Length: 162
Ligand code: RP5
Image 1 (tube, protein in one colour):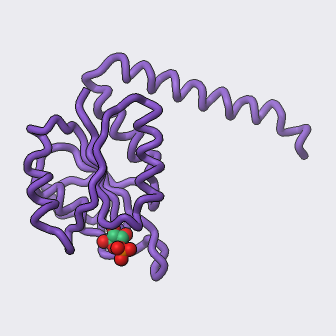
Image 2 (cartoon, rainbow, N blue to C red):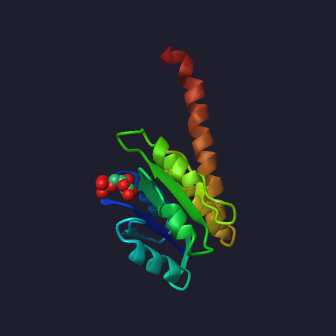
């Protein structure tokens, strides 16, 4: 199976990265994590990205806060699918990172998930890999079903909780 790259702009993004990593672990998807910043280590971020396809990566998830250019800078250097996770920061509550990540110029796509949306980023990466992996596709179908059943169990018990 192809690997997922988890690239964070700073180790202060780690709590959001952990949300993604735990889903990938649960699904048995191999991943590698790195701290590369679009601003502080642009050359390393670029070199890693350019080698990623040959290194066996299928999807890259980029996590960054503030003026979050990491996902876009990575997408500029690869045609692998890139998922951007805007991370919340104190000053603007993540709106800065959301807009910086989502408003990509035409021709260089980044699939942006919610602010701090590490879990959905991992699930979206899994769905991409499942396009060519029937076993993973079935795992995702089963997982969705289990989540639906958990909601229906809550529905059945809600009257007793009011
Ligand atoms: C971004 O700046 C990082 O992704 C992080 O979210 C934010 C703050 O970084 P630190 O100052 O905590 O290293 O590049």
